[in-house]
Image: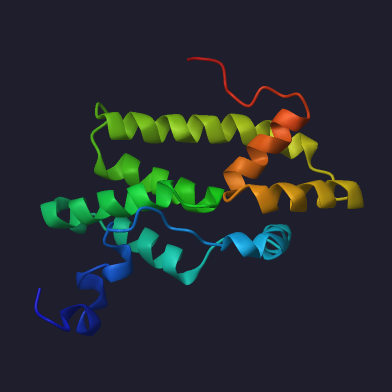
Amino acid sequence: MASGTANRHPAAHPGPALTGHRLSFDLHARSGANSRLEEGRHGRTTSPQIALAGHRMRARERLERPEFIEVCRGVAKAFERGDTYITEMIGVAIAKRVWPEDSPEWRAAAEERRVYDYRSKYYAKLVFWDATHAKQTFTMCATNRREQDVFLAQLVATGKNPNPPPQ
């Protein structure tokens, strides 16, 4: 790709931040534990970068181009390692589009989704926004980098098995 092409034709290339060279896509900094909770409580669950990446990975004609599939696979991997469930689930959705169903990557993405569905079902029953719960959550956010790890810690703290039964 010629220098500057990505800037003139944004749909032609996902951009340097989204080429899959990053190991993870973190939406929130570790020090932003309080803002992480506030954003979750007020329904702000996405960012322009995530929306753009998701849009670019859905274009059917692009998914027929091998070079774009490779980029999407890298983006999926980075998002799957993200620090919020929404980022991880966008990565899962992308992975399930760009890998064959019999591949280890597709199966891993399907398993991530299954675990999320299981845990979120129980977590939804646990959430009570009172002062005690908020303080416990802030403490867990300070010691866990990812939202997923906070959910896991909260399930374990209440005695729930965080792992779904085998299929």
